[in-house]
Length: 392
Image (cartoon, rainbow, N blue to C red; front, side, top):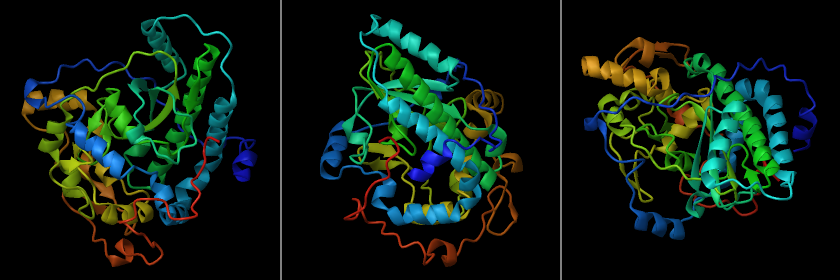
């Protein structure tokens, strides 16, 4: 971590693109035939049971060999962005260490929530949502203080670079997004502390299942590709969070019609290079969702510039929900499906272009790379493994 301390003094020469402006409210009415349920279908009792018997842990603490492998194969996008990430982590740590101002501001929960939303817009967050903290979805490895309310902070990453998936350039856009997200989350934390409330930012890659909180805060729904899809920027926004004891009004899950949009589309299922995406949702830890096959997905993500083909071919990510609903109303079809604009990509492992429904052949040299000694059955951190600390 001494490297991070030194890098915060390094001038930012990364050439990171400008962050897109904050999102306008999504106002289009979703057709009734697309509605299923707000957020995700849940079995609350099953959620509680699984959480007791098999608590969630941070992925790279459970699989430290995977993080080492990804870093080794991700130099093309990690090296150019490392100083910017280090500076953002430093700001997260500074925000963590500052103390709330004595004497709390006397706002009603409604007034304080509106004030917080306006500040989020001012500092350039794409959108925020507010949800109750849920210990079932927070990792025990977290070094961030856990306070009653969670503020979910979204930052949209550069759209043009995202359309270059899979590539180092697209992964750099993701890293820039994380850095900008941390910087703005730190600023929102300081804002709450100036009002006299305690607040604790979480670092990169996070201290909890971020997409759970995003859905709980009404920011999106789970796509069949396993990502949280928002109506505005789809699956390629970065999610950061802070917890606070400020009395805020909680948002509620929303039904954007995305479940049935996914069912009509399934471009990600057809185009996944290794068939890691199931066609149907099934119950997993009490939530009805599409559970990706990690054993097939991770080796490709690590070696093919982050892969993310499932995001590249997602029409919600490329066009936004408003354009999709308008096109569907006029034609009865999902915008972009079957076109090279949406479903075409250049595969970094062989340099070839693949069009709609075409997938590269991914052999055992990738899926069973001998350098990736990965125990998929492991559920807890191995003995002696110290988790990565981004906050403390």
